[in-house]
Length: 96
Image (cartoon, rainbow, N blue to C red; front, side, top):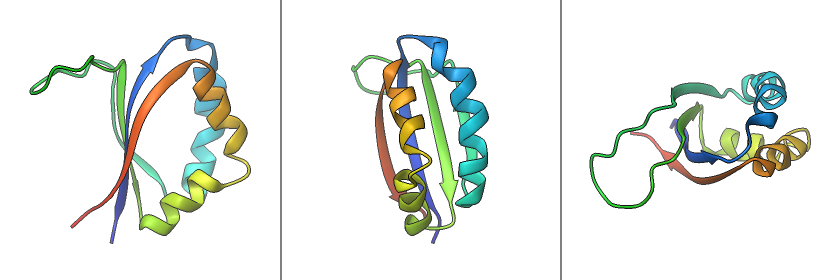
């Protein structure tokens, strides 16, 4: 069953984005990940919390693949890089 990670990210410093983008793509592909949504102008349709700068949804073949990507030792420095210039709320969910 497919699994999805949804990120609501608020960017505070853009300096990390280029390096992160180049290096994270092959890691995603190695784990079967595919970016389905990247929106730099999310629109509120319900709720009151602050809007993120960007919303990203990544599809994986299953929860194990998503977990393997998040826990990949090569991803850990990239995670720290992203966190150095942004904050995020992320959830992992399974599809139908």
